[in-house]
Image (tube, rainbow, N blue to C red; front, side):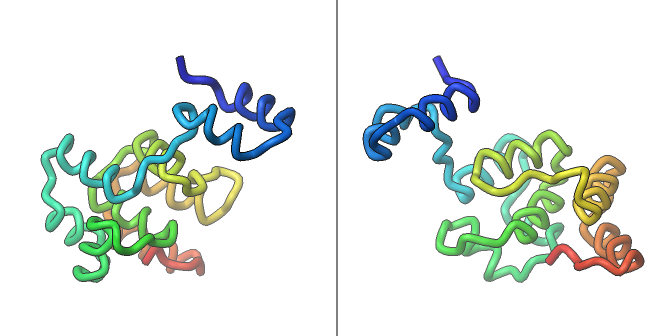
Length: 140
């Protein structure tokens, strides 16, 4: 049975040896690789890599390297791919959390704009237009 984050934190705080903790709790610690996760979602949503990449607005070669696992992108590039896959907010949060990125945080102004856009089904172009109008850094 999977342990909760709180249970893992309690164990980690009380462990004398990090190596032992990591070894004993390996089944409870997320180690999903972004490339694998993206391919899984593409398959589930019946979206080709090419479609996702085109909709994401990312450079084609770079995005294919992300899908192959040879590039480990910054959070914004992952968000662009999430828009390329038309993921819901819950799906985006799960992808970010599971692959080791910070989730979108409603107390962060820029993240709030992105959450707003996701909830309304905006494309990456529309998201960036909204961010630009508000004087914020684009998702690219």
